[in-house]
Image (cartoon, rainbow over all chains, first blue to last red; front, side, top):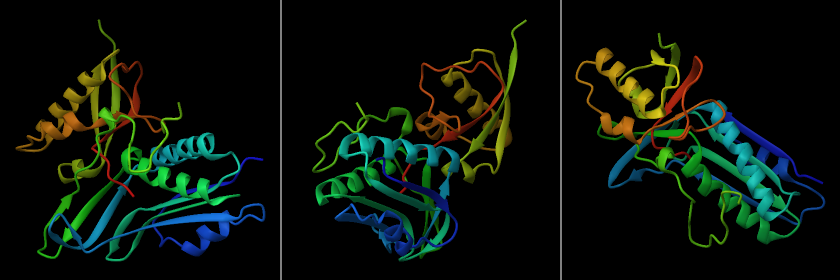
Length: 162
Length: 90
């Protein structure tokens, strides 16, 4: 049986409890949770907050595609929760939650890692950092018009779904 | 006479420091992605005094609300598009 998806873009604080509750399944013995938070430094600059800009419709479409790709690689029964915040966050604020459950732990670990890496390279989401010196800057990112296969340590599959 | 299409371009990310909201522009039926991006640059130069961020436009992708367009795509109808700078979510 195919697993469940919860995919969202939220202007309200993200809830780890909601993510864990959603993916819980009596047939699954493993769950993996990734929590992305705002840190107080980047590239030598002191950060006091980050604003997230999101193209919501295309982001949700991207999330759906990633769920399909994750299931193609690690099992159709995965339960997947993905939420990204839209708006301004202070230090420590949660920008993204990804939760995956599966019968055994290997698939949860790998699918969760895959999803966050792909989101960073494919989802139409942008960050504007606000610094303690009063400046703000849009963060450099990954160009969608030249996007190729995403690679990272431990990556063993062609994650484009091929 | 060549048919003209009306495009509305949503702006995101770093484009917001130049213009808020969306751009309206007209292109020739069958215009390529490159031609649409050129037209976006022209429109921004007209709207924003001193706009010179051609590198931002070059690195950005065009997209519908369903997919990112490639260089092999072209525009055949009036529609809403978005111009997407390099991404960094998560």
